[in-house]
Image 1 (spheres, rainbow, N blue to C red):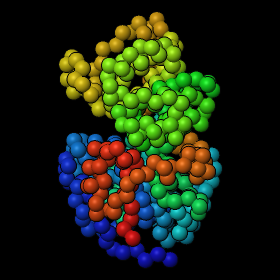
Image 2 (image 1 turned 120 degrees about the vertical axis):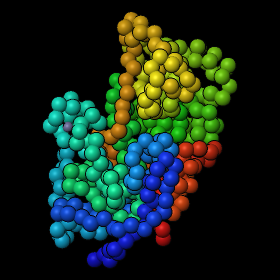
Image 3 (image 1 turned 90 degrees about the vertical axis):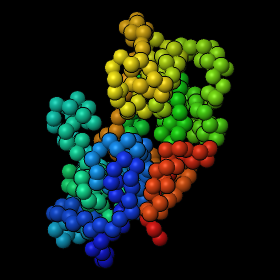
Image 4 (image 1 turned 180 degrees about the vertical axis):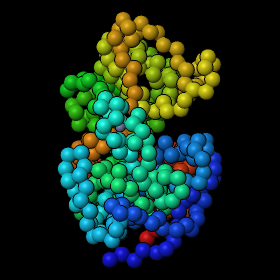
Length: 377
Ligand SMILES: [Zn+2]
Ligand SMILES: [Zn+2]
């Protein structure tokens, strides 16, 4: 049905800041595995961090926000039945799908506590274009291993591959929103209105929450309004925003920190009421030297008045990565366009220009939000 070549083009990570456009073999697949021809792959900050700082050993092929077409099923089958968390799906050659690269075992100690991101099986990456599995979306074809199949979702014909590639990031945001104890009409500050911050703003709005959106870029605050923010605050003027936070102190139910800023955490702890929550979503860089104090944008060590936790009962919580048990809800939100992801995607690069896509994503401009790599026509 599909002609599958022997070799393909891929962006291979060869070391810190070293991405090369290479020709490599198309991955071979085993029984019950899928070969997917990649249509779109989103550029994600977690991959950018690994590329810039050389945090993992090369060679690898990154890219995990992937959507494409099933071109082959392992063992020469034309159909494959997969039981996911809540339903059974039959995958066929030719199906358009959104991929999901991390699935927990559901039976270990972590999984029984729903701490899926800590599960050893979850930490394994089940999608690869070759080398050490790392997502593989920056290649023409990927191999999808059996253990991640429960997270794969079919894409309705009315929706685009670009929308489908947004399932993974929106899943991580919905998982985080579910950690907040919120009632309709509550107030939440969302610090940072990049693609992730805007996803928070929109999902919270859909839950009937009043959002205060903050950022340094006016264009992003305008968009936050369109996504449903009730109030916006531009933090460029430090003095007036400090006054504003003072005025609003104790009036918010929660704050979401979608930028790696310690100041934002500091302000949020004052801003929220007693019993409120501060959710960290962007503080993923570990501290290197204990006792070095705060070094601007996140040294990792943070002075905290512990009475704000004990006496004021404020919770400091975090959320990391995705939860495949909410994948159906994420798919519904995106495919129904209750959350129209098309408004978030601003830039498209061909596979050979992936390094440029990564550079733009790491230095956002006034008009850049979500950036995707698309298959060459
Ligand atoms: Zn991601
Ligand atoms: Zn587990």
